[in-house]
Length: 446
Image (cartoon, rainbow, N blue to C red; front, top):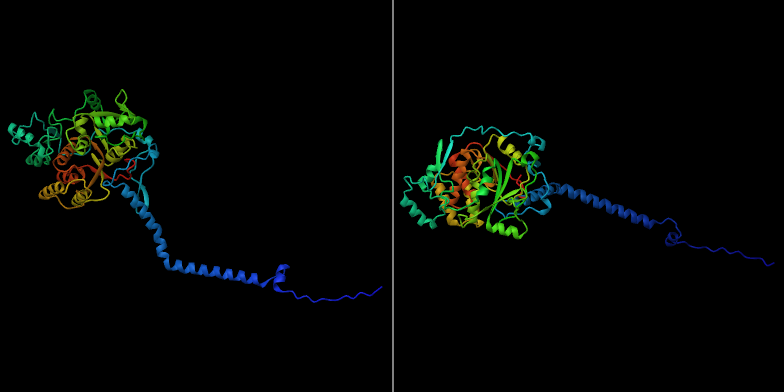
């Protein structure tokens, strides 16, 4: 048998071959080390960046919060366009809050619904005011020193030069000065001067208005805003409060064309619709001041009133509002303060810049106020000088009625911007028992 020769063959194994065979390799180890080194480098750079820019990083959240709050304030500015209530929020009772030193707090502290159910109306105002009785001037009793029959005829013939008319009466400058005197009995113009002055309401509606003891009112003339149904009232308040919306025939027609039809009882939801005919002013803003400022003339038997601009949905119990803004603070008059400015002369400039009135109108008004000694101050009698006046809550007492009459006459005499005349009347009358509060959101009054 032939002998077999066994030959040995030497094979050189390379690194690549070893890797392919599953042998350990140095290259992956080097790659992993490089990645770890790169990660450490990135981490060190990040630490150095944080150490260098940490103040900026801390400021960024604060800046974002400030921008958010600024956007809310712009949305709630009384000088901007009036946003409408979003349909998605109409049925919600969201708590309204404001930022105070970085902490959110409720705008107003209301009692619980159960506590509101148990509220009892106070016997009367606890404030001892000087004014006890008001006599309203009319064409039946206004032939005094300044109003001879000839003078009234002259003023009527030249009424186109002013906005005084048979609804307002023709207040002279001496009568204006007299109206700011605080006496036990005051004799003032306060609308409804003549039976021929306009603002006509049906006898049926007048009887309803005389039955109201607490009234929440709004108005929309010339088409106007949507009418939002009030929510948030407790059961015991429903029979105690009248909700009244004043419309003209144009608004009635407009709303009916949109499917909002007044029922046989004169109601749309909880609102009693009062249709006013023969509006006394061409300027619808002035017509709107009548239900806003002269509530005591329209509801002679009422004890309390809450005025809410039509851009709001009223989302709180009215009795709870009276308790929070009047009774708890021993006040007779509460009004929403201005959110953007505090000075009457700054407000005059803003009105002109935003084309809310002509420069000439504003200058005439402010010139008269300077002549009368109106101070250039941000606070008057301890209160913020400017009101936003979209919400007015008051006891219908002689002292507050006197204030509203004087305010209405200023609005008629000068510009329709009631924010401009409010501080003047506040300064002149120094009415006790005023509470100024903040309205946080344009989507609801409180």
